[in-house]
Length: 158
Image (cartoon, rainbow, N blue to C red; front, top):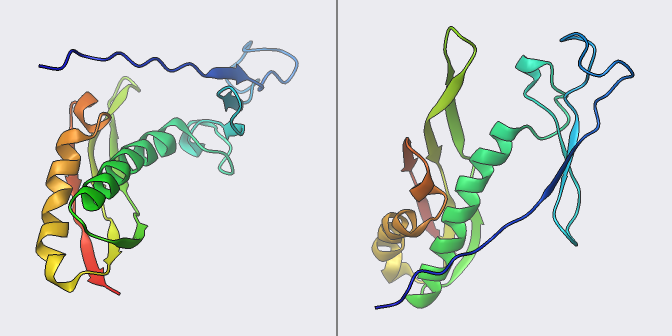
């Protein structure tokens, strides 16, 4: 039996939204911030525009939904490779549903992935479709959330 491996991740998050008066008033500061990991490009973040954020920057909700999609895709590509399925294109337009309660708190209630995949092997469409279930079981991020992550794939042949 293989022992558990531990992986560690560190990023730097820096608030850049002090407009001169800090957080003296709710409207006195920007929600802008920067996210960076060593040696990687800078990500410009803010809050959702519903919460006074900059609509031109990524918000935590955007990044969270994209993280679920990315993790699923990476496992799916691995499983296709292991099963001799040649993927030539993969695109997803995931949608997350978040609910906000009367206190202003909230949580995600569901994320649905809509991957559109192109493969070369016409005789492996059924297998290619079924691998999404296995990718979901392996996805570290999906295994870490307490809500439904659904997947509605479309497979076509080149």
